[in-house]
Length: 92
Image (cartoon, rainbow, N blue to C red):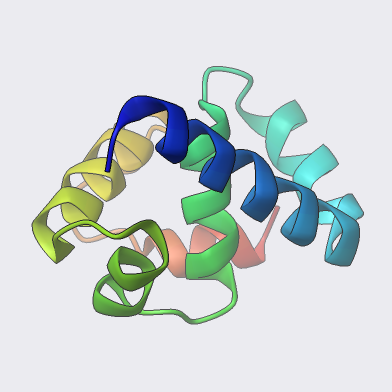
């Protein structure tokens, strides 16, 4: 997928998820302003119990790509090895 199509896809998904879960988006941005729009979308999908495989399908990428984003998100949120990203997102 080229960058222009990817950008449109991210914008569409962001609009959809932001409309459904405005408080989560707001609270996540307050908790970690360093997250990119794509990382916020991935966090929202993880928070809604979507697997990396399902998230990858939404973004037309490989599950390994999503795993790489999860690693960056964990680092930005200050999570240690063994800390649950999903549980952390539940507490935001």
